[in-house]
Length: 378
Image (tube, rainbow, N blue to C red; front, side):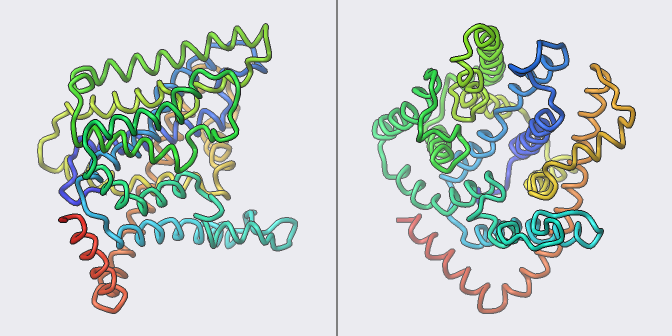
């Protein structure tokens, strides 16, 4: 969301965050996590440990937006581009699958499924992609949030953030019961909290996290993992704590937030010299969102692991070696396919944008952008 030239170290973090998202989905799809329904196994423990080191990914993505977004102007064209990117995947994937004779959500038992069709046409309203829905809404709200941050004093920001984090993060992190209003961080309200926290750090900085970024990340991940494992033993004896067994996995869990902040500041210390690699990282960082839109499409999210596993592990071997092999192949294949497809999409969008830019829609978007830039300067 920043206007200035993107810094390669943070774009590398953006890429890593998307790789982490793929790992999270792989662990869930492959059933390699510690579960109350299974005894403790080495592969499940390793998978769960990896899960906790990847959980910061979603908060990191939003944190990046808030940290740099507060310093930039709202671009209506970016909102339109993001929506069109979501539509590109939502609409074209089922067409490609149907053309190849594969089943899709919109057609079940040879009949048209109206709700499935609506999910393609209105991916935001139906939460076809829950993250994309909240992320787009957050961007649309960013002018309001940025104006508030720019006009509030440091003390006012601290009070506001204290209240929001207490309500949406701290209380739920220690509560043994689920609250009606809690969506575990899978919603716009939590994204707003993370965005404002990032905006605060972007405006005022943090000596503690700047000095202890990597340590904060590592200790936060281990703390979440430790709590989760302790709760496994507790729940084996008292099943009334089954809900809290899942809490450390929630995106609005306290240690999940501190892990994201720590990882961000850890990457702030990484120096990447300008050159070919920096340009490549920036390019892939800009295309990384397509990886999510590809593998989390409603017609693919429950299929891709089976395809990859069947190809790279046809004998369905178990154990550590098979787990690592499937994981590496899944990440590489999904990442490569996502980057390639989104690169082709970006080329298509570039051509369309150039043509529309000289016509009325393009001129109108420029006028709207100028209006927001004028507001930001006041």
